[in-house]
Image 1: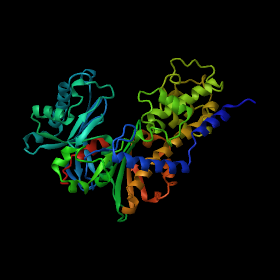
Image 2: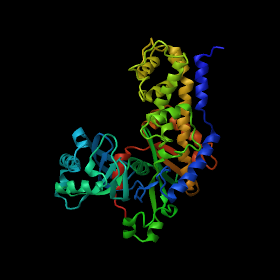
Image 3: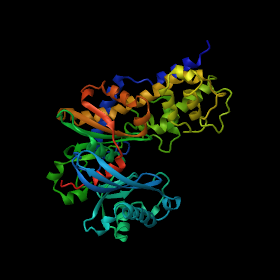
Image 4: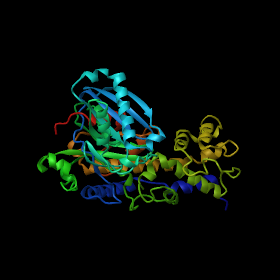
Length: 479
């Protein structure tokens, strides 16, 4: 019996199928892993890193804070004017970091960053140079650090093409501050945060309670090229937060004071279930992992994030070709379908956004899809593209359902619905913002979890976590 493309696509799609009972199982496992990770640092577990941010914004904060963001090849300087009414005004400038600086010395690199801060202040806040009060600055630094205090973090390693060898193992705040002081800027770095912590802070500042209900922002999450989340936790529930592990903090404050604090925890949940105890593991997931630089790590991220969804579809397309069902006349050498990680997740978004009938017209949506795939009309017909839709839907739905697991699990772990009328979750990232129906599917999946009342959970976009969030982290905190 000859199998058709649609039948084989249906078989592939069933491999990605996921239901509510699976989400429930995943939530239970995430809660268990959270408790373990808060107790001790384990190599293959979620790191659950204390951020040292102990204050959640109320939206009433006022004043101007400075923020800088180094997340890749660009460096951004911002001043954030907090209006005290959940609104803000941001002025920002951005500059590219040259390859020479990315692989040079720490003095040249941080000297360059300090000069950008000076140039920004000269152009936008010249009044600062006549003031005696230091301008507080928050730094979003999206590289692995061992953070031991809000204003102290030792660089573990560089990523994203950076290789400044004499900075590794040193406190990046101190290195940056030395260069700021050398320029007599009177700017004080008071907070070092990552973008996920900033997402939570930015959402909390902007979020308003409705109808007198007690609403609290609990989680900041990113569903984009990668994924991560941060949430507010009571330190008495973090057994690994000890004087032995964090001596700098225990020198400043008494154990009793520390135990009564809440602190934002950077979960690094991309590493959830690295051992694949409950995560789905299709042949395509296995093939994808084999061709990553961090094999057998970040297994959760590899099933839900924008960097990987396109690759999952690409691997499926290659199997359809090997079955003689697709791309038979196409020489794939040099084509994105042939190249590892050559297919962008936008391909899935375009297919998901269009109906099969719209694709089959051979115009508009079809043309946009095949262009994104790096193919031409001679390579794949409108009917063949339309036949892929159930597979694309299954891959995207699995991503959204899996993404619901940490949101529901943290809500249950913290007993937030017992404390607040409404639990607020701030999210950023391209998958959340642009993948069709992603947010709706996440909330749908949360509805299957026992103990979760989805009508009491708000999930919304958090604006500029790396800028506004860093500025809020720099806001004075008496605790």
